[in-house]
Structures are given as structure tokens and as C-alpha cells.
Image 1 (cartoon, helix red, strand yellow):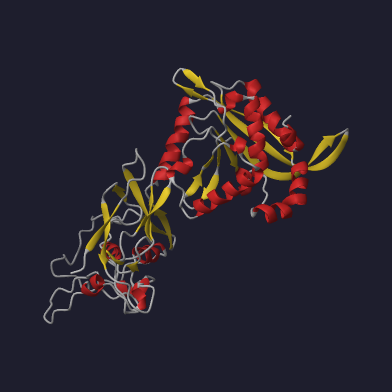
Image 2 (tube, one colour):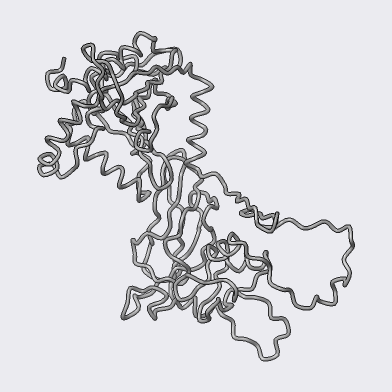
Length: 440
């Protein structure tokens, strides 16, 4: 008999004992290669992938998407096997797993209770119903033949059943009721609610009004906890200013092609703001400090977190020692973090630490906002949309590309004078970028 190798939740951090299962990248019965990613798991800090511990057929998935598991807990197993000939080993390539071949029980000639089994043929025939999908079918009293199957080899997946339910599927016409069921139900019997917590529907005015209940992801729970912590423990205040972006836009337009050709990365606005922030933090070190107990901790380095929209939501990877980085290194690091975030491959260490944060809501169209400090940091810079607006220059009204900027700061350690001076320093540097090279 082939060896069975367990797939377990790995250790992903010293303080992390529980994870949430994300998307299974492979399905039961699929052939997988040693080291190939099987499933995404989400911790309170980042999303990581669990690779296959051996080559073989994936079987016995015991934790489905959005369920929780402890570190070290088995969530699946792999039946060790050679790659099937003539394909990539997928279930639809002719190399079905031995376990998948054993799953459909041979029908007994005299069977009198045709209970649905995981091997029930899915709509269109030729496929099988996965265990999680079968549970949903049973709970909703649905017939597998009514649900389109999209899994490998015609398998009917849990996602197929959920999609069928969300599209307003009603229960099939029930056959004659078993003799054990009373023919005439009591008039006062209340309607039974749906038993699956993920969805709930109510027929009103000839249409469905539905709700979907999903567990809060671990990353979202951490974000929520930290933001509430900031609001409850820090004395937060926000100050604003506006910046004429024309000088930086002119430099970017003039040198973006040469910059991309030499460094292999696009020249964006974030590198200008990151370097301007370093200069402002040097002038006003309290914005780069933190409160630790009854002490104030000042740093002589600038580790700046850059908020990036990722596959699982907003994440803030940290650029270490930005004061030592070039424009190209800043842009390259941001581009790499954005790629990893989109693929849910950021590591917990990428998000740890940071002495200050920059959040650019302008890429989503935000005109003005009050960002929340990420404790134990003492400040966060919010960038917003660039809009052409009339402004007064030398006694004349001119049209300039303007951006509102906001600094939210912890008033326990940062005074109003320092906060206003910090934003003025950002404004002066961006409106006259030569200051970055002259260090004035």
C-alpha cells in the first residue's frame, strides 16, 4: 500500500497558534508535486501557502475554506504516488487518484436505501460530489443533478452548491412523503430557518432578499483590534495641508522613461513622498518616536510602512532604513511588495515593525480622509487624489494639480507645532524636489 503523508498547519510565528483556511489550490483526487502549493492559510498578520510534503494524490481534506485550524493540526493527507503518464497529474488528465477510484461504492443489487454518497454523479454525468458539497446538498435537500459541476473531472464542489443556492435555487419538488411523516402538518408549525450559516434567503415581493454570514478573517480581526486599540489608548488628532504637485509631475514626466530603462521599475510619486518623509522625520523626531511605558523612545532610523491593497485586503509592508535607500530601491521594493500582496505571499516578517506609515487613499479616489495611527507608531501620513484646482500665485488665480495631505498623530508625544511643521516640511520638499538632493 502506498504511504500516506499528513498535511499539517506549519508554525508561522512565535505567537500564532491558530490560522484560518483560505483557498484550496488543489481538490481531492488531484495529483500534486512535492513542494507545490496546496492551500492558502491566513494568520493574524499575513497569508502564506502550505506546500505539498510529497508527490502524490491529495485526499481527505478535513478543513474547508474559512474554517479555523490549530498549528500542527492535520488538514489533509497525500497518498504518495508517481506522476501519471501523459499529463500534469490532474484528476482530469487520466491519472485519477487511487483513493478517488475507491470512493464510489459499487451499487448493491438489492440496495433498498439509496442514500446519497460522495460519489453521486454530478450534473452532466461523469463526475463526483465532493464531501463538503454533499453535506450542503443534504442540508438544503438539493439534488446533485440540478447543480452544474465545475471541478476537475466533473467534480461537484462546495463552491458550486453555494453558487447554486445564492442564485436563488429552490428545493426540488419533493417525492411522496415517507410514511413516517404525518400527512397533515400542524397548522401552527413555524417555518424552519435555513440550517447553513453561510446564507439565508427570504422571499419578498416575488424576489429573494439574501444575506451571507462569513467569519471575519484573522487578518481583518487583527486590523480591527489594532484600530480600536489606537482609538482607545492614543490621543489622536489630524492636521491638513495641500501640496502643488506640478514640480514632481514635471520631473516624473521628464525622467520616467530613462528611469524605467535604467532601473527596470516605474518612477512613481511614492518614492518622492517616502524620501520627503525621511527629511520631515529628521526635523521632527517625535513623529518617528513611540511611547513605551512611561518612556519616549526616539529612533535614528526610518522604517516606513507603505499601505498596499492586497488579495486579502489592505496590508502595510515595511521598508527598512528608507534613509539609506535610493529612489529606485524604494520603487522596486514597493513594486515587489505589491506583487507579493496580490499573490497573498507576504510573510509575517514583512509586516512587522515600522516607525511611521504612509497611506495613499488617492489611488482609490479619496479626496480627503483622517487615517488612523497604527500603534505603537505615533504618526501616519495620508495622501489623496490629485485634482486641478484654482489657487492664488503672485496675486493671480492659476490652475494647479493639488493634493490634500493629512497627518494623524498621537498628541501624547507629538505637539501641534511639530505636527504642523512636519506637514509643512513635506509640502516644501515636494514642491521643490531639489531639496532632496541638497538636504536643505
